[in-house]
Length: 357
Image (cartoon, rainbow, N blue to C red; front, side):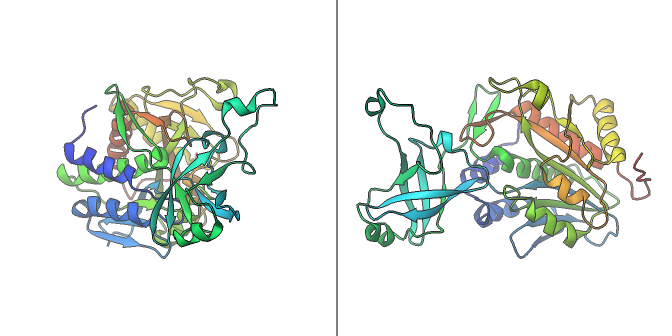
């Protein structure tokens, strides 16, 4: 899949900019700057959710949405000898922390630190220790609590990983926080294509990049009440279940490179889902199917359950190694998600009947 140079430049800058839950503003500024030429209006709510609007005066409103936040850590406790203990901000995985370099976002700027771990030699003849929240710690080179605080580090400071974007074997994009800033990239590309292809749509389109998904879908919950859309199409990532140690009987059968994943779940509206599937078939876009029992675990649920019920659907992108610093997605899949959302939008009419079944 070939992408425009300006698109890839945006993607790299966007992914490399830390946007932890609750502190998404730096990434949001980059995202808004990119979509500005392709929309008629841009709005930001009180907590940082951004949305660009095409046809803001239209009564019928369609949302395409992703979430902008990435998982991270909070400084929770500083010992007298200058070590830092943490709590999660979102679903951060403690098992990958040992030996990782981190950026501590202090009051005086970014301070580098490392998640320390005892050497293998010192663990001989012991029960192998497992990384836990209680025993992982950050060393920033200080030897006292006072020295840590003099660096501008206090309880409540945000901690992120600095791992940056790269392409692998001309097949994958790799980076931390592809969950789900790759979604923000994809919906931005939909806006770009509509503008550059001079497509006219008969409704208001709200290209929405929500905050605080990783801690409870809160940004989507708030913005759904603000926009009050008639239809919502959400994109997020889902597991590539062909990777080792994932049970397909539990997680389903999805694979990077086999296309976007269309979800079946109670919060998914039948009419919107079938419109998406019909579009994929008509336009010969490869797609996969997945099911979720009680909820999708994505912003789809927040939109679907808002405002007395909003017809909503979920198009997911298969991803390997979720919530690590080496998340991977297929470039071909990214292109096909963009195409599927774009082509589906061109089929939506305000007069369409939104029957549930």
